[in-house]
Length: 304
Image 1 (tube, rainbow, N blue to C red):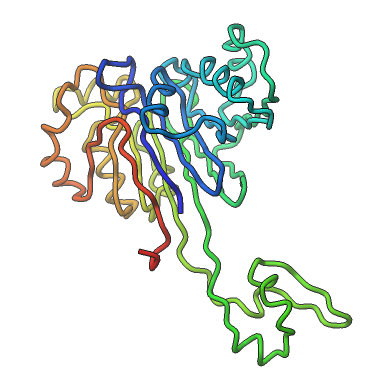
Image 2 (spheres, rainbow, N blue to C red):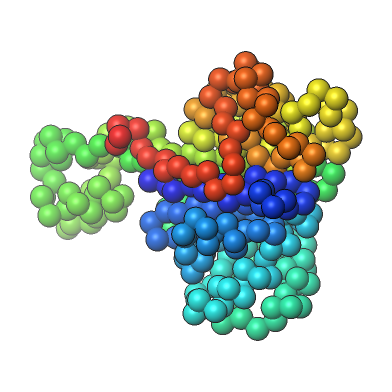
């Protein structure tokens, strides 16, 4: 299972009731942060989650509302006695940008490992969690992220018995190991059924609608997507500044056949995004217009 918390829902500037957009995930003792604007630390505290397990920090792009909270977060990680390296993923110039921000956080008790994205799509795996980065269409280089947790097929003891596979190897084969026993070689596909549906979450903000979002969000259990504006008169502004309206995001959700969509990155001028709930649900019914720190736990199908 993956714990999910949308720490903030604001875009451009923080408001007293709306922190800037940031997402935090927890899985198997590890935490992943996507974006780190002002208010990120406060929201983590209010959620009651820990800073220390943050192993990976992903950045969509380098506008201030998505990265300006980083220096303080790094200092907090250091004060939490973290010594393990932190991996950061983001577009080109990541190391340069982060080191510039670290002017006010120069000494840390842990190393930072940088992964700079260069291709349109790239994939990385951490502790069994796969992070897929895909380029979108903003006015500077920007990426969305899909996070996936695969699920193996069911173990079939009848197949294991039929092939005379010793009982002591069953557990290791279930974990995907290949075992050599004298002249015999046993592989997990000999005893495992077809791979089952895993868990998938997609996060996308600061972009115009592009086909790559649909293909990467396809079948997501949760699609968290920018909805900068709900007002009809803001559509032209959204196009000019390379952002999205609620309804454009909803069209992407419908085409990608996701289970649920949360809108985020609301404009400061959008005081009551809930006013547009019924209309956007007319495009994609399972749309949530969340407040800061909306959270959920994504679990495998059949584990309810």
